[in-house]
Length: 426
Ligand SMILES: [Zn+2]
Image 1 (cartoon, rainbow, N blue to C red):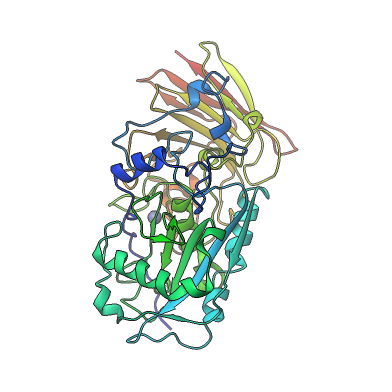
Image 2 (spheres, rainbow, N blue to C red; image 1 turned 90 degrees about the horizontal axis):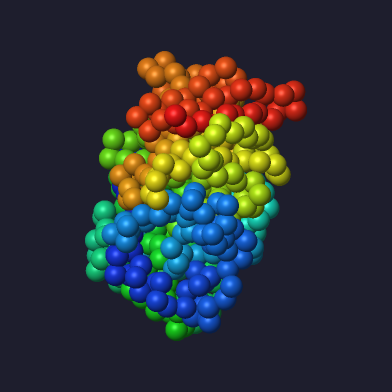
């Protein structure tokens, strides 16, 4: 038995360089597909929205220098996040770290749980298919040590070599054109314990990536040693590192910062991917195309307006109100309850957070407003940021930004579980 340990904040995922993103926009990756096909019309979701639509003022964007932005629509080059996506999933080991047992047991640590997590979170809009055309361990030609995998930058020499070796080893049995992105499940005995150094990382939208079968391996998630926090829940929740890493592949930034999960707590898997299960913010669901335009309201008018909200985890109904402050930022308002992927919600209510598309991944692009500051929170779940767990607003409570003249009041909740909020500007 190991004492329960707080897992260290993960490092910010290595990301595509600005150049790579610019390239991505200029290439054919319209669907974010690994294939180098012709640009196609994008599917459901914010990408298909015109800026002239009623939601236009809420389609905030960051400056081009922001590598991975909360802006809507998501920059091109990432993997598609609606419909059927095929994840080429390879289990990889090394001469100095041979994979223990059956490689498909490693696969089973993540599937079908990851697929189910995405199905639940997306209301069935993302049909995630993990494929293992190679069912055994894919042995790399060099030792793990030789690749020098540390806190790598995107496709630094070690990673570039590793991806090239993975491609070379898999190529005889794999047509890379058939997949939307790559999952590399590294044998857990390679490298340091995740309690000491979290190596898991994703390369997203990287068009400078190595090429396989004529397509760039632009979107790839790597998972290393197990993030077992010692709380005894690993067998249920340890897979959640993969939905987090895949979130990057779909274009979502990291919400934890160098200081940890204090900005968003356990309200999004891009903030905390260990401990109990959690969902994504409504903003992310809109960004990923899992909410229809009719489920999002853009609160622009000068007059006070009331809006209905249904629980974010449940299917159908209004889910997100956004109050734009300027072209780059605004307040998001949603109703969080304990259902679906939201396992630890201990104070159901309206979550209010600021989204700033001009703040880069890992620098705090989202900040949750705590309705009960310094309360210590209401959760006792291990590895859940406690302070923000009671951040929600309930009927009778009001959020105010006096500087920007925005008031968001929770005015009621009906027996059916629907809440009403009133947004006003002073
Ligand atoms: Zn991350």
